[in-house]
Image 1 (cartoon, rainbow, N blue to C red):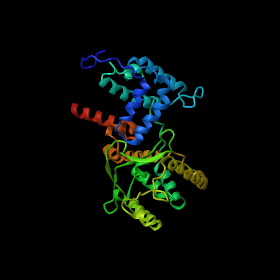
Image 2 (cartoon, helix red, strand yellow):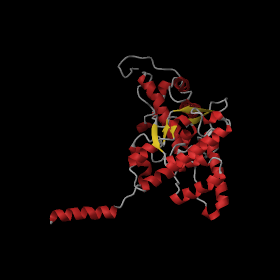
Image 3 (cartoon, rainbow, N blue to C red):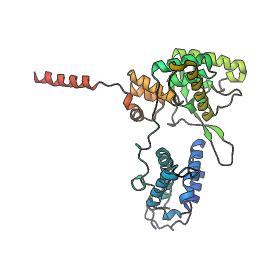
Image 4 (cartoon, rainbow, N blue to C red):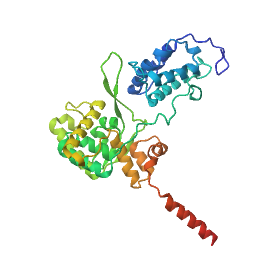
Length: 346
């Protein structure tokens, strides 16, 4: 077999599973990302194609894997319980990267996970769950109630007023916040790392885009954070220090991200019981981020500003997610265009 450089190389007899294990061991990514890759390969790839020789792997094998995962890919193999298109596409992304390195190393003549041949779910099929943002009145109702009834009110408030991701909030330290200048530097994200046979751990890594950002805070949020820091300091002096987590638990440690989301759901349930018909609808914790974005865009804030606050990799990402909420008046635009042409004819 010839490599891409025209050099003769012995076809690899290495099983695909063994190659993928070696590839994972050599990754230089955030620990949470490597753990996620490892879990998905262990559950959704190795059981199906791990014993196949790497060199004999074809796009047909990969396509069959994707279809099988869609039909019955759950780890417990319950009949008819397939993986979501989003998860299958994530598996496809991992395989494409892994086998791309095998191609570059001359172990393959082509990448069998090339999406043009292996046909993973499309981006449209794998789109994120539908967002359910609150309107301004609903957000105000929740924050007004939580201010009196939730010990984590400051966390819910900051998420809603900044659009931070959950992991970014949970990794925030006091040294990242300049209360005098009214800014917060988002540099890290906390995530759960799971390795089979070991207890889950929480680790800090880079933000989703891999880039730090600085966002401005409104005066109400600054006032709330000043009070929150004094309250934390009254619990233990260490919690007041610059190195302390802003939203750490009662022992100053990272809060578990998934438990944090469950606490939001429990808070919403209590809010609904208390406010009855006046309670805002049930949403996910991540929808506080969507609420921040949709309210700002709906009021005409520039997309670039909103994109910077959210920490998207580019404005294109923001547009693709929130295009449906961008203000627009096509009737007025059509009338202005017609008037322009009419004036030119006069």
